[in-house]
Image (cartoon, rainbow, N blue to C red):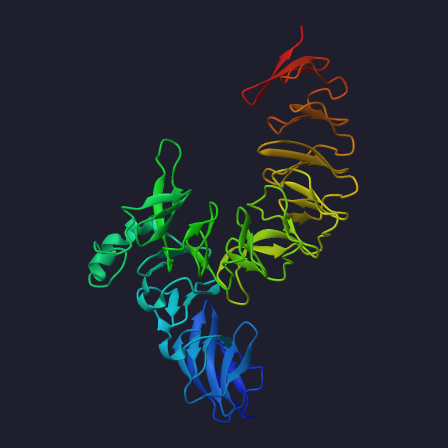
Length: 470
C-alpha cells in the first residue's frame, strides 16, 4: 500500500508502492503530522491525516488533502471513510447534518449499513445515501438486507422496501434474534391476518392499517399478496383518499409511507402519484421543491412519466435523490431543463412524444438529435408510437431510430405499411423491405394486404408474407 513520508523540506509526500513520491496538495504541514487511518480502494490509497491545524481527508483521486475539522480531541475514525467529531458524522470530509456522533456506528453482518439515532447510512462501492424511513434503534442487517420491527429493506440501486421477501429472512431472524420484537415473531402485534378491506388497497384491523400490493403474478402464477404496515396511524381518524393517498388528523400517507411536513387539512390528491396542500406539490410522496401550487397541472394520463407543469417549469419523473445532497434515490419529480412551459404539448396520451417551440421530447426527455422544425408524429398503436423528421423514422417503443429510411420522403400508407423513395417499411414487423419496389408498392385493403409490380404482400399474426405474381 502507498504510504506518507516527510521530505527534507518538511513537505508531506505520498510514496507509492513503485517508489515514486508526489507532494500532497492542499496545504498540510509536517508540524504535528501523523497518519490516523489508511485504506485502499482498488489501487488508490485514501487516508485520514492530522497536523497542527487539525484533521485532513486525503483524496487519492486528486492527490489532495482537505482540512475539515479542528476538533482533534473528539475525532475518531469509525470505519474506512466514516469518521466523527463531537458534532458531526462525516462521510470522507463531508459532514452529515443533522447527525449524532455519540450513537453512530456500523451495523454488524454487513459492509453496507451504519446507523445513528437519526437515520440509516447506506454505502456501497458506487453510491452513498441516507435513509430515514427505518427505525434505527432496532435495525438489523444481513449483507444487503436490513430490517426493523415492521419493514424489510433491500439494497440494489438504492435502499427499497422489500416486504414481499420477508419469507427469505424469516428463519434467519428467528434463529439469530429470537428475543427481539419484530415481524418475524409469532406474537407480532401488527399481523395482517384479520385485516379487512377499507377501500381499494387500503386494509385494516382494529388497531392497524395496511397497504396491499401484489407481485410476481403472470404466466400461470398467482400474484403474491403483501400487506405493508402504515406506521403511526390514528386509526379513529384514518381515511383513504384514493388508491394511493390517505390521511388521518395528523398525517398524510402515500401508500404505506408518511409524507413529511405536509398539511393534512388542505391536502388533496391530484390523481395517480400527484397531490398538493396549500403550500406545496407532491409526487410519489415527496415534495416538489419550487413548484407553484396555484398553476400546477398534470399533463394527460402520464403518471409513470410524471409529465406536468406550472407557470414556470415543465416536470418529469426521474429516479434520483429525494433530497440533496444525500437523500435516498426514488422516483421524484424534477424540472426538464430548458423546456418552454407555454408551448410544451403532449402529442400522445402515453406521453411517448411531446414538443415545445424548440425541442422534441421522447418519454419526457429532450431528444436533441431529432429535428424540431420537420418533426411529425405519425400514429400510435400501443406499444408502438411512430414519428419522423426530415432525417429518419422513429419508434418510441425502445427509442429506436429506423435505419435505412429517409424521413423527408417517407409517407404512411396505412397502419401496416409506409415507404420512402427507395424502400418499403412494415409498421407491424418494424422491418425495412429494400427488395420491394417502392415506386409501384401500394396497399390493397385495410387488413395489411399490398402489392408491387412483382409480388403480393399480406400480414398475418405479425409476419409479412409475400407471393410472386403469376
